[in-house]
Image (cartoon, rainbow, N blue to C red; front, top):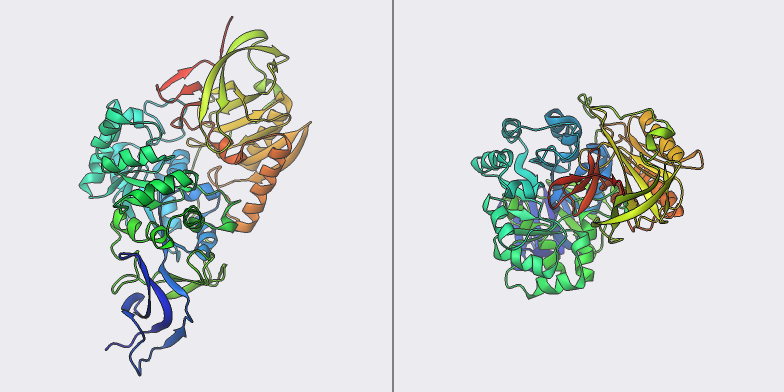
Length: 563
């Protein structure tokens, strides 16, 4: 019998295949599980290190099968420092934010920056850069099918990132077909993005070789997508009592996963994938099932056969929990090495990152004239309307608007949205209803997915002030009111990230969102919503530097038309 380096006994081990906890013992050697047995270790068993778990639970490390590091606004080392203590030990990162800002060199930068972390980071090579093709906005970068094929050869690339231009794929855009063919040739999974397709359109989309969907789910959508062979990924916004009830009725949940997609830094102190697991359990999913949906099932989906279970031969990535949802874990292990304890990182992570490649600068400086509406008096406007305070869904209404001195004065409740391209100088001003903003302005260079400059406000002067603050910072988020800058959160890496500790970033974004709420913004996730106002693949109407984008019909509408 081989001598393990680490022996754990007296705990309850989660069997993610039979969905049960059992009393047993574990021996670890060379960073892998050597022995995983029921009962007590044989008499006389010895190891370099021995721990009595005293009834604690042992579960696999959490695997996030669909996420974007950039949504944390943190450089990769600081992101790892933020999520490891919460039990996330492995992620599939789709770096399409960096890719849209800096192209293929941005992706190579992220690959290098994640290469020596205790967090396992695999890459899904972005498929949709720019987000639509032909683009409905001025892009900052473009990945050709040839470049995507080269990037799929990176050592930790294992998937093709979400094909977000679902209409483009259905309508036969050859760029996506070539990228999917390259992923299939490499035997990699192809991530989907399917917010609004069903029926024959959904079938046609899937028929191109897409394997998953992570967008907002309902019981009906889950049923159709599972029937048509997709892996269904549930992020926090999809978890409702109805969805959990639908999951529990399924005879086979092996293609149902829990993922994060986007977690802003303000939420990271409270958890990462652990939040989604705990929420699923709180809504009625058995904890064994929820943990399997965040460990063994994502490992199987991604082809990571060395991860995802407490089983002999698997990498010894595991958590010690005092209860099935008692996050943060008592201890987090990666390759048999304890990396975090009671919510604190206990290993040193090098915060060195490579120098970033060139990328288009943040536009500016601006004057108030840049934010004055290009019309006066009564005019008919296409107004984008907030439909829900919990998600990013938007509608469109045609409204007769009265404009005075460059700003809308009637009907009340309208905000001006400006999108300014980083590359080429194109710009557009339009109107938004339902945000709740009463005064002031906010500007951000973190604006999905192309990350052009987005400014939302009630007065041209404040909009210029906020935009200039972001320009001076080399990227970031700024809020202004009555000629005064209230908050600035610099994001000097690509205009979307900062190389600062998680706590500092979390506090900075909390202050931004607190000020936005004080200014009247009523959305439950103020910054998250503002950051997707320019996401040209997000239903149903968004803004670009070209105009208002009708996402479902892939066309650009003018913000204003004469009466």
